[in-house]
Image (cartoon, rainbow, N blue to C red; front, side):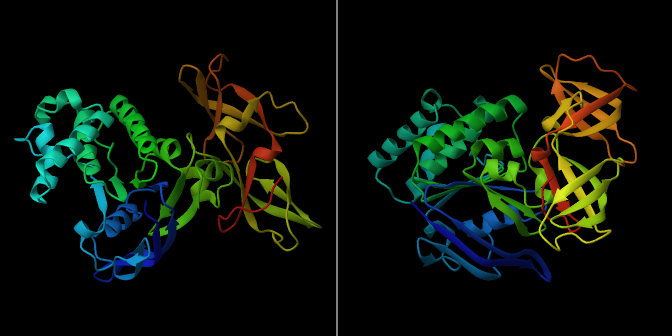
Length: 366
């Protein structure tokens, strides 16, 4: 078991700072997933934890011990990379055993560890095969097995599934989830840009943007209560719709807002939270819409269909709303008959509407 504490971690390359004071606590046995767009710093932070990048300033502490100057091999960490990095001339068994052999571990112990890891990862039938005789998913499992045999305190995964096709990615994701269940005391940190991996694997998700943490929380917390527009649109697929507007009247405990599509909405807010004429936005997830829009208790809209995506059990409607610059997406079941240029009405339960201030931060409710 291992607890990690990151305090004001900064990383610079020459005069360019890419990590801007990261503070994060990770508990023993947690599965933490770092997500964010390319270049946001998530892999740099992972490599800094592993010791593959030097930390410019701040403190990395594992189980109470400051690790900044500790060699990577002494940190009790195993890392699985995006590329499999297997030795092509060695068998699966030899690839998994290699690191233990060069460390001088007795042969019997090496054999026990390799065979135990192979059983966990369902690789036992392939131990004598070379990597070229394996599928991409099997090769990645060998790379994971090579990490398991070291009995690390912390597992680091750097986008391990990005080289796999969709079917293999889904299957290997399930294997990683099972691996975590079989090793409940091992702390795991996983980097991905794929929100499905994040939502299905993580105990907690850390959302990065431009070298800073935007929000930390469980998948449910990030989905239901995003801290700002960036998190709201990054978590969830399709992305949350954002409708801009402005405050047209400030009232006691509320503000009347006019949205770009011509709909008015009253926002419940604390005194002084919104200013007269302040820009604001509301967010609506495509799956929280309901075709019909006749319920007076709902926030109702009307739009013209520009495109229909048929996805089997569901359809995604791309709508043009009056005055709105972006397409508004509605997710509905796959049974309705919709066509381009058709006008549809839809409603949204007010409790599912997110309100954001002009700086993008979440605030208030309908």
